[in-house]
Length: 234
Image (cartoon, rainbow, N blue to C red; front, side, top):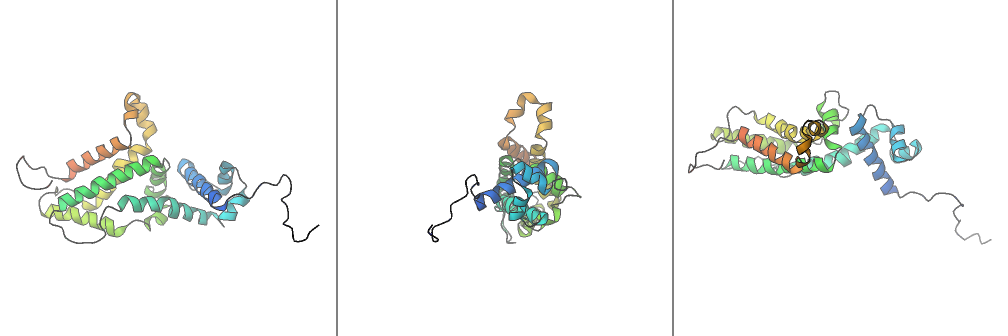
């Protein structure tokens, strides 16, 4: 036997899984289970069973449960957050038409959020149970990824609009951000409920319909309408 020849794989021994693909599979599985049954109730054994691997395989890619949770936040939630809020400028420059700037940001943010959540069924329940909930296991981890400068910019635009008399004075600018999240994520998270209440029209309530509804409510609640022919951008 030639000692330099490569060692043949033993018959019946499965090929080594692709590392990148397996890691992504485990992250997807963990994310889905976190959304379905909560982070606290999900163990490494549950993730392994759902993925069809052993717990040792999960630990091969993630040293411990905390590292796995960090990876779900960093690689699944954080990119969505960055994508959704990207349309809002991160600077604090004063604009001559804050109502128009706020409206443009709202349209893009709401559309991106509704479509991102519709494409990722795990996002709405995970956000409500693990971020909004006081006892949520992901809250502190997710808060580190919120784009504070962009959120402050949106509230500043609303405040500028209020000073100019084009945005309603009764609006709390900081709560406008929460209204965006509630009007998009809540309908998607409770889809099973309203589909039972209105089964005849459930199929028509898709991401586009949810985005359009959210924008109509936000526009009506934020912007002061001008009579036909009057000046102003709202």
